[in-house]
Image 1 (tube, rainbow, N blue to C red):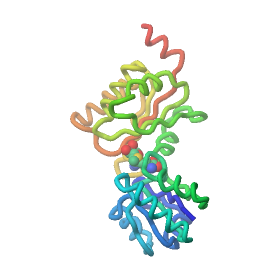
Image 2 (cartoon, rainbow, N blue to C red):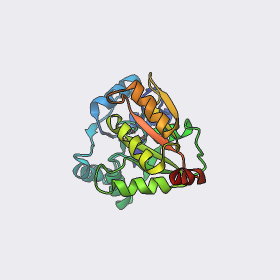
Image 3 (cartoon, rainbow, N blue to C red):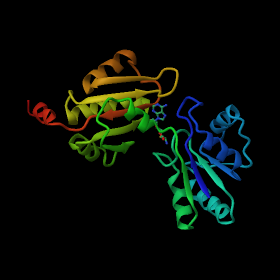
Image 4 (tube, rainbow, N blue to C red):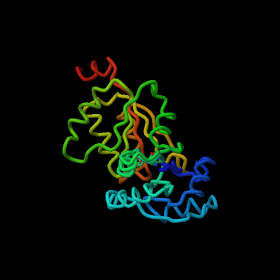
Length: 234
Ligand code: SAM
């Protein structure tokens, strides 16, 4: 059995009772960052039977090793750095291996930065598109153009030192008035939502962080409306 265990994205209390039990009982816990995971385990009294690392630099080889463990009947619990495994992180390789071997894959739901950002955004959440991280170079312009035309609410992950550049690019393709909500440091001490038209969000970030923005960020962008078309034609 492969368990995909969601872990907190900041506040260590954001973990389910089931997740704690599964982590306690698993034969093997595979985690992206063993030091990071140990902090969580200590907080909840979890004593891993066996802890192995699983990250973007060893995902293929480690996925094959873990697949062998799964095939011989071991239960493996996978935790990524934070949040839900498989959402913009290296979990896919082991999930694919397990499915290929006909091994049961059991998600243990919990925190996810995209969903928390969306839920506090005030945007239309009946339909949304998750864009994750945009490519840094190849294909970036095409993706930005697609986002500008997207009618659904769009959710983007971005690193703090690139978030202002992303806002500038979005202003370039969507215009300054498109509504956005930037969720920063969700569930942490300095959690905040900066909501408003793209240009206002950028201006407020510039005032507060003249250099690089601090903390982890999720940007939620409202979908294209007729008004944006009018703005672009002004
Ligand atoms: N699997 C994770 C999830 O379920 O959200 C996402 C992993 S991805 C590698 C990391 C990105 O998630 C960060 O760059 C940031 O965009 C977002 N993120 C994670 N924790 C966050 C937090 N506490 N506040 C805001 N954004 C966060």
